Length: 203
Image (cartoon, rainbow, N blue to C red):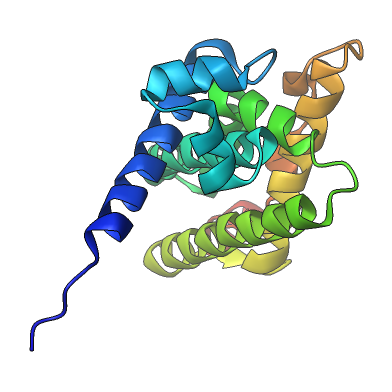
């Protein structure tokens, strides 16, 4: 017997996807500041209580939508990194691109709303785990293909890189003097080309 999906389940999934897409669209235009449930509901063509039904709260919805935007942009970051020539340029491209992505600010703002809500904190943990694992796999592939090395290990590189990106972005968003670009973010990645280093050392 063929597997069938209950029509109500399909409708629920479609509604959830529509709400998430509408929220992501609003975030990409204006960020998470002052975004209201009513505004999201109008954009998605749903009733406000459907947002609570499918996501539990506006903060949970905004968090999921912000990470959807952010993970999409990290795919572009990875493509930019693959075009880099040499390990040094690779590190610099990743750092420059990560700080320039509009979704970086959006996701940091969403993370800042977590507070002491246990469910929200658990959701953040899961979403960050996805980000870190995707980044680790990416670094592993690039290092293997290029014959590079990671002195600290790709797991530590990924966590340190994104933690520093988020921290710098948060400080700038809070009005701390300076800019995220003042930080030597590229130095948080320990990816190097051992052959190039040997050549330089022998000169």
